[in-house]
Length: 426
Image 1 (tube, helix red, strand yellow):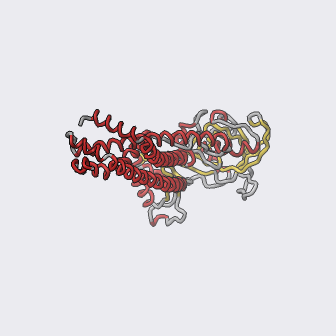
Image 2 (cartoon, helix red, strand yellow):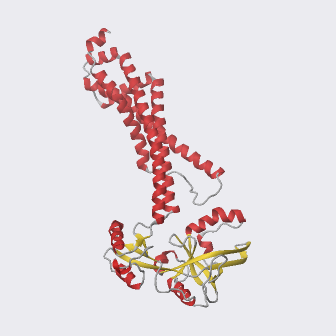
Image 3 (spheres, helix red, strand yellow):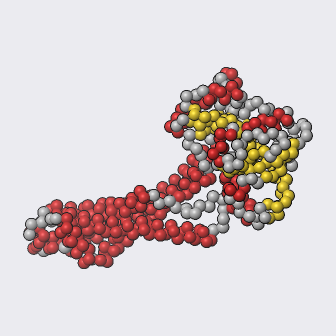
């Protein structure tokens, strides 16, 4: 039997039982649609967690001094320049970026026009100095170097802090929404060695101006990121430690070298600051677990649809026993009969998979539209909660096809094994 003849016979059989074929396709479509919908939701939420909430560079690791240092017993534990030199000499390391926290408290008291709106506010600040190379790609003004004591301090703002401001602080205070380009050049006062709540170091406070020169994923979330030499200068002026570093960011030559690099760093008596990475992994695992549970439920629906298809095809084969007997009598082989039943099931499964995938995509568009219209703004709210890669869309159609063929396997064998003489005799 040629493929064309097989397709025509399958189409004739499906047209004779439109209702049964439609119900079978509907069952497959429900299972496939649910699976595609929930997997796309998990992929979309997971992408927001990875790229927006906890952005991470796969080849960058943060080294910090250990909480409890055994000093020279394990060969280290102190992040001074000698330790930085040893880290830079490791064969897996491509670049080293030092960090030094400003070891005195700081406040900012702002009163005046804030992008067209009046603002009066005082806030505690954290400040950390970094090597310019760590944030150079995000600096849009100047060269991010220490300007000296009488000029504005260049500061990099965290992109996540800007997102939190736009979605929570600005609406509550009726302040304008800001973009990354808008804040570049904005200057605000900072007083170092002054605090509203914490104890200050001996000596006078240092008044300065900070000027935003860029917005970066690598910026300090709860404060400002300034040049390393500026932090060193401020620490010296306050009589604080200006020689040891708060942390060191290591850029691995390749992400695959990161596990080996982490082991080497730990053997040197230092620790890895992977708090954000662990939070991202925990959140991602929770999203994956929820998605997997819902996907399993969807697969069970597909399995029930396959059972329904098997039941319907068994009934169809019994009702068409004389027809199958005539086909066998005029020369159709067992394989031809089996292919015919499988072709009918494949058409139903492909149609159900296509409709289910399209329905999941349409439902996702509806959910996004409702979220845009009715959900209030919140930090990291995405334009879409879903992600539909081509592999998922194609996999939905293939799943429907596979479920239908699995359900048709036994009925097709039963039809192929029918005795023509007994079938014609009734």
